[in-house]
Length: 467
Image (cartoon, rainbow, N blue to C red; front, side, top):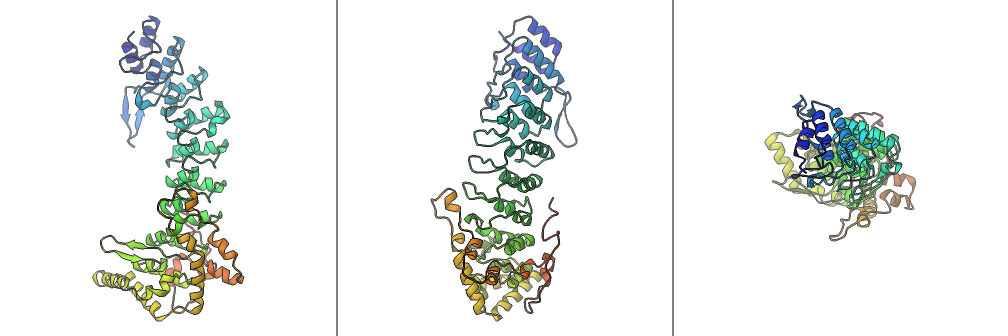
């Protein structure tokens, strides 16, 4: 039997006509026809007439889903299978319940649940009904489902190992935030990892979802975790700027957990993010030499954090690093005589009258006049030996967490040394000079080494205004 007239009446949301057609018994209530889905799927899937665009360019519906629910009642009354699946490829085998959750049809959703729709059915990708509602930010559907669904569905995973909580933080929006908060309140597991070892925290950081990421950290999400490819929450925080790094560090993050993180300080310096540089240095990030190339058109190769600060015309950061004796072997052996860096700075100063370039030239002159002391050479040698494993790149062909993991941490290696506590603090740069306020870096006098007061601000240094 042909369902063409029935499908058209459903798409037109003509309740009386649907009832009249069904009452004649000439339609195949559970069969597909002419490349269309079963009528119950068409009811929740078809676009209604009377659509318009609002000022925010979001598609709004002229009618709510009340008419759809009434048509669903008729279809179920005449024997429609509430668990019938879509046969269309792009729907991935969804049922009417799954589509209703995806589209936010809360009235249809409630009716289908009370009519016996199977809450455990998933689509072809393994998405549950809760997951589809969360993915699209439909908090009304989420509230209803979490009240009636089995408790086991809360942390159910799709084929990629993702949970509804992960989907809630995959996109930063007010609607997703409401779904996220609700899932957290009813006990969603924040420690679950997907097939690639990503947690909900990693999803939130990657999506720059600051409010969700902050909540997860404060609730005890694992901040010292690695993905299969060696990514950590710290790396995502630095690169995505989704949560203030100082705030993350207060919760005890391991700065040298993954070898992939060995360039984090270099990245922060190149971007001129003073607060991140300060947080990493004062919390014990080791000075490491890495090959770092600036400017594709005129390559300037640097290695140490100090060399990068100078080459990228960041004099304030360079002063801070010098004040803290944040040196590497490259600084002691090559930086003072590195002609390409000086030539580049001189060119910038001559062509653009760049004040920052002129200041960096003065810093290079200072370093040339001040050879490293024996104490500095010894500390650099110790630090380089302890951070050698962390700075070592992963050999080609090696994969998995173990190849990226660096244990014990740099801090633990320092603690194991048979040295006075004062020397250990210097190796970790836990000295008063490391706490200098970012706003004072421009005024640091590296010639006189005047002590500066400890910073207690919650502004630029702590980045508490990121939200």
